[in-house]
Picture 1 (cartoon, rainbow, N blue to C red):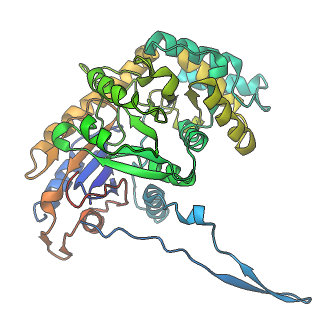
Picture 2 (picture 1 turned 30 degrees about the horizontal axis):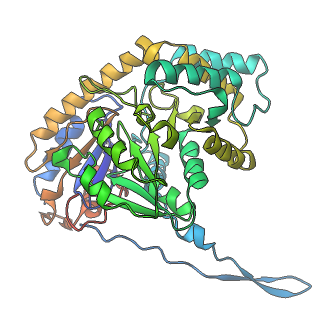
Length: 450
């Protein structure tokens, strides 16, 4: 197992999310640090050196109800679709952190990837003014024309891709946009190609669409970038969608343009194959790395569904507003799902989104200030963890995570705990010794490191 960690270094409690089979940790560097956490981990990892994957079992049950009229048995079995979806361990870690908080323990909850900055004041004020001005009714299902037009301008100026407002769908966060995209383009039995390490929701979204996730491992020695040859070898007539996330959650890797062009050439050989490009971290990127939108590559506009949002770069995770850009027939399909699901996103959040895009190219100085802080934290943590024996690091080029390989500690005996077998037991050990909180983050099917 590997493990993912979201960490605030200047407090007593640090949240860790465990993952599978790489033997790494992901650290959320979206919060400030003073070194306490690194020292705490270092003092406990001196003792240390793979995890059983829990399998879901369908629960069939009946409840006997009794009334004055009759006695019946009620089948409460979940549907096969629901049974195919695994519970997100990042939800469990949040629940554990909340329980400790309620017990009076000072917990820093960093399992969810979000900046510790407040929403910039100009954006917040736009939301407040929207309430005062009465923008509290239903908004159009596809999103306000004002916001969709602003998104078109942003994509043209910053990403070099042209869209019209009817090719944009505003949703309740980028997560909804991704799920609706997967459901729209995938049929039962289709395959969704996902490079690992990956964001925990991608495979479950594929399963919700009755599609099959196909996980392709990457290597820390290659900065977790997808190998084109291995990618091509995994394609079949069932291959329908490739999901790329750059900058990556959870590794922070950034795909260089040349590599994306190689991947695009492979995609072009397969008529059914589409690409979902998750670009929500595009502005959190560290020079000399640069961001390339997959849809901007030759011949890829027609095949690409570009998803982005406001949560990460603009510190707007709680506002819940994201968007999809793509060919109109795909976007319209997603819009039909949304119309029967949630309808349009909050008008208040959309007004705030317009203000965010009005800050200037790539968010202007407001965003660049946050990115500078993320870079400083990254540099500090890379140096600090680099001093720990047996820890392998791929220096992230974007986002606000570190994905570290601690597999060398598996098999170690920890006094008062026992054998550190895998990332799950490592997290249990850290929970016991330092009040760290562990949960599963991502999976790789390979027996060893990915």
